[in-house]
Length: 628
View 1 (cartoon, one colour):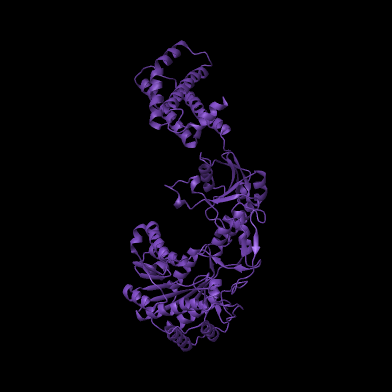
View 2 (cartoon, one colour):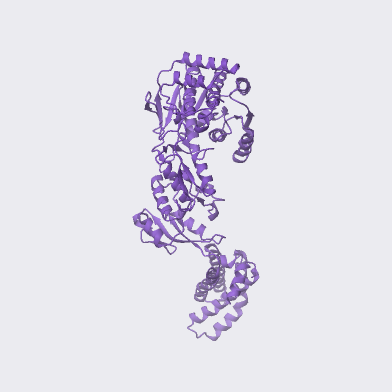
């Protein structure tokens, strides 16, 4: 018998639908006989037997008709669920409704009823039990002998989303799952059950995960407090569980959730702080119908600026970048992500270090807003190539803002970094110098000049998250610069919203700083990523401390000692009270650099001299540097 069950399991089309239809019809006939026997206590009068015999063809015809109409045979029996049971009940109820209608019609015409109403009611109940029971029995036998045992799952959230999630994950699939418990913070739900599954207090999560031998935790609550979410994730990680969450309802396919739409938890879900929400209406008011230029448009921040500008109704968006392949990828992303809006995206290969490239593009495109994201950003690389950092981050910024000013651009936004505050690296110093360039050239003109300053961006190109991910995939080790190093983090969409909000709300000549909450220990981030991958630190993956790289700080800062932070209209956006800048001296340095560069005479020594002259807070690392 067991080989037969396994054969049926491996061949879902072994039993044709007409066989299922015939079994359902036969079970209904059995139900009719049992209904008569029960109604008359197994002593059916002769006249009732004769009436029943005459009624059988009509009974079979009605049952067959309603089964065909409601397609009770359509589902694969071994995968039967609540929807199949609903179809059976509807078909049976419709048929019984016809029987009762025939009784009423017979009474109105003064004829003998075809079937007693009491028998019809009993038959309905017995048919429902037999037909649904048949499906439950087949599914139970299949599950008993199936090779892959269902994965025990705990759902965090016993509300409507939790119920929908349970229905989705328990549908038959190549990765079968079974919900063994719900967790919820509502004390009123503790001790109750949903579809037979117990609800436990969420505060007991560690004990419940252990007692239920759970292998996965699914977070179904859409707007769970980030701190609470991080606590639940940490408990599941400690227990070695795979963690998933439910996407927003608007992303469900045709309004219905399936197990395939569940996604593994992301590293940004472990930050433990709320996602920053800014004023979309203010941003839209500036961007809608505007012409937007994004330098460095194919980078992590630049490409998101491009996409959000398109989403918010920009008339046309020009992405300028020196990298051909990423620029091509951006075009493809614009077409797929923005569809109709993608036609408003233009791309141009160009180099901000070349003033003629920049002048020609701005004069031709005539942008209303420029987001200047083009920059070299990797601290160790720039530490050994200060001239490259100067040419791109400093002179590139000067080229763009001078061309913008000459063409009458309305708003210029520089994307800066927390590494520009009390810089200890060439990259940080070059970005701080870029801030001074914006203030020296742009301030005082009709153009609004805005500087936005924020920390590390999660999952940006070359950041620590992709690095750790690659190291985990290759088996480690994870390279950590220092066990106590900390960084501020934000997501790419948050960073871009900050930039756009700053541009939209500023009256000009502003430095905006983002309140990013508590800094994150990179060592803790590394351990969480290891556990998110289902691995064990020092057992599967080793963490190796390699020491701080040239120019790196142990802890980053968001403002210098010369700046105070002032509140703005949004609690998460602060305005830095700016220190005075010797604008003439900065412009003189730029002129000297430009003249020297024409003769190839601008050297590493000149770069360092310029930093020392304009950035008294710059404390360079003691390293040997290249002269290229």
